[in-house]
Length: 386
Ligand SMILES: Cc1ncc(COP(=O)(O)O)c(C=O)c1O
Image 1 (tube, helix red, strand yellow):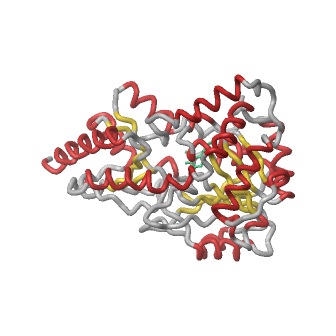
Image 2: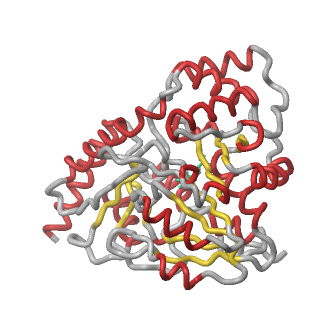
């Protein structure tokens, strides 16, 4: 049988996590916390199952949860969103991305994605029969080149995949970026899929600007979010998509035959958790900023350069002052010689860029970050001597 995705293997995240386990390395690769979730959430999940919420949930998601999400959108962004017609609960952000892409892209259509791009975007476009046009963000600093983007638009362009705060660049899009994007798609038959899973993780007093708050973008955007990130529980696999009613209707047509509906007890538990702790998202920036700063302090003087990280679960490590290898080789050396698993950026690019960065996940216990810094410092010292 001919593969529909011949170039897709097992993702770098899965491979690195498996090898980290095999080599007993510290895993700063895949983006998941290694600390416990709030025990109250565990209690609420158990309570939801005990209360009998164990059959199919409504296809579009539990209304109580969608109402909580609407309340959050009002409190955080001042938005009035209709939970009935504009919010859909999905199997993590991954399903929201997949279903939205299937809803929009048909055979021969094109979607624009900016490299380094999260790895699920292009396969979703290909499975829909479309072509993903990958545009590298400009160096230094992974900035958008809107003129180049304009030049890449064709009659077949239907979708722009946008991500802020950005994984793995750790940057946040500016208001000017959103204005430029809105201007670009204005008067064209193009929608935006905005991946905002790190909406709450913006550092140094910065503010996440959601496409939902942009008058030119909100009417033509799917915005995608993840409770895995917000609740430090990536295994919970509950996310959601916010979009105007016409886009939501199309999304749900795919969603109902893709996952149909999402774990019912988990939706009850999350709704109850948000009722008790409506502000839980607000704590995330400070929580992760402290971790980012801890790691940055511990690696200062190592010879690694740590570019500014404006947001996300991650921090990039620039190894150019210490080694001339490419990022995949360097990540391999870090894994086998320093016993720290990281993620190179090459898998996020359609065409390799020879960038001297590996990505570190900061959503880890302080003790994990401290031990990783000890290993990275020792490895850097060996490289400096070599
Ligand atoms: C940018 C980005 N989008 C989407 C996802 C997927 O989110 P979920 O785990 O909710 O499916 C991730 C997970 O790491 C991510 O980093």
